[in-house]
Image 1 (cartoon, one colour):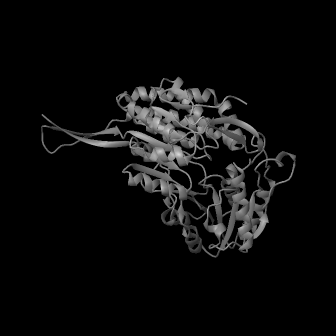
Image 2 (cartoon, helix red, strand yellow; image 1 turned 180 degrees about the horizontal axis):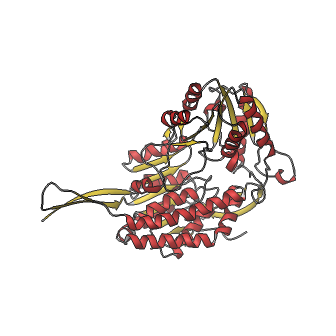
Image 3 (cartoon, one colour; image 1 turned 90 degrees about the vertical axis):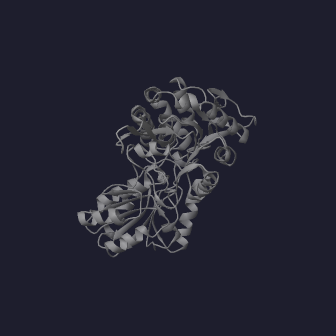
Length: 482
């Protein structure tokens, strides 16, 4: 086993004052300790905030093109280490290799994208009422950004928070997920090698109850960005807003795909299976509800069951679907399966732990499909965060829309139809921040806004693209009279 990884604070790799470390194990083989990280406390987090605050003036006064150069160089270094980063991600989070490699590439692309955006930031010239006034706006950084990121996309989500924050001239304190922090540590290493000034980025590993809470409460932080569960995110939002901070939260989902009577059942099953079973269902945008017109219901179910039963489950190094990230996540999924059966849903595929030598030690679960699901069942209302799809039969498009909207969440939604009028109605009427036509609910472009409605988001600010930069900047209006 390698030496414990250290925190990155004020340009140095340092140990926690606690003297404690925490092990990260491979979800495909929990007896395999992948790495060891600092088990930090509030004082470690406060020291990181102090370092970020001290670096504010230097970084905000660094020209945008120079900030962009550093981001671009960091992206290039990540690209050179793509294979290594992919291996770390597979070992810590469990993703199948194509998914892990794709996520690493997304992080690389994000750094390159925002490296060009950094040079464009500035403001806009406006027309003034009088002849002797220059009227213009300036975009300025907000200050110290506290970023708290989840385990399910352990490099992509930190990248899409961190890159715009740095491009806009903010300094950053970042707490990665405790069970998969390795790729964030490597991002810090790449930025350090690219020439990022000391204190501009600070990474502290440890529990959210100590490190994350200190980042949120500390008077030195000015804005908070959190991605995670709705329950925790709502507490984060309340705590941050009570402290007068700018805050965005992106939370859970209960994402539907509505399959219309004009849909091809095989095509629809491909879309739903890819959206629901990809990343082992551990995505906030994963499809967990297939809402299917009665005319194509039976054929669709047969096709979806076939796809569930044909998936190759095992370690992400060489299988199509990897394990759940932890024993607790696996237990939660199995509990929801039991609840669904207890409420009267019909289990038609999966529902248990797979058998075989490749899966005998890890946190594996079978791709699972339930039919005869009532929209009010817990399996149709609550986020499972595993490869479980509830199939709900509806009699027409209006009923399907009502069922799609009949949950507390509103992150991603899709419709499969050959009727363009239905597609337009779905786009207009579905309550979701991301809407797709004839496509899976998962998968995002990096240059357009991302965020949800209802309990899926604070609905304050969006992430990614120009919307991401908006969160990390504040406008100043200047009246220059002469």
